Length: 288
Image 1: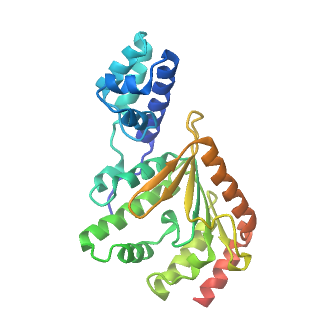
Image 2 (image 1 turned 135 degrees about the horizontal axis):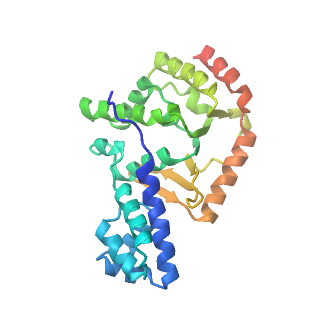
Image 3 (image 1 turned 90 degrees about the vertical axis):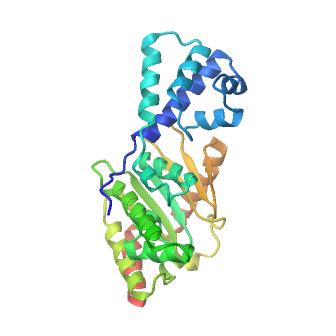
């Protein structure tokens, strides 16, 4: 295992910088196209910068502040310091050879979140997987992957999980379809160990696990798995993450987020309540 520790500062700072620069641009009446032209970037890249999806060069921040009419030395230095801090590489950058760039964005957001709500229909959520279960999932998804690459991928997943044990951990609220718990990923022994791990996780104060039972039938999450990330910083909006086969969607518009929040709330109401989760997990364990 690597000794890298999950960190969250650079992602939050990058998003905060983007938010503040967007406010300054709009207050100055400057279009996104004009701002992009000033720093030799396209309008779409300027949008990604303001959303915190990519990092700013310090020189570009200087040029933008000048364009926006920010002349106060103290204000300029505060934002430039934020830009320098935002460019500090996260621990996941050491795994860039096995983690696609679109997923690295999520890892950074996940590490910065104060609340992670997730719904899964196929696999146990990554933050709750045992190492053997994670290996079985990775082998099914990438059967031709070299063993060294596979182990680095597993190492990255285990490192992600350390955020749940840090001194100020986020709250994780997971809703999993009953099929997740009955699908024998990795065989009986691996699945039994995974179920035992979930029972132990459900006892932790910052983790809530609910199960969407077969008996309920249709429900609000039939469109597929998704996660909702919430941040402690008031300037940061909730983000909905939807993973696809070779890419991901990041939704932060209020109307989109509200739609998924409503679906999540309905699933939480329809699922087995948290105080009964351990009982159901033990029942499934006995049947495995």
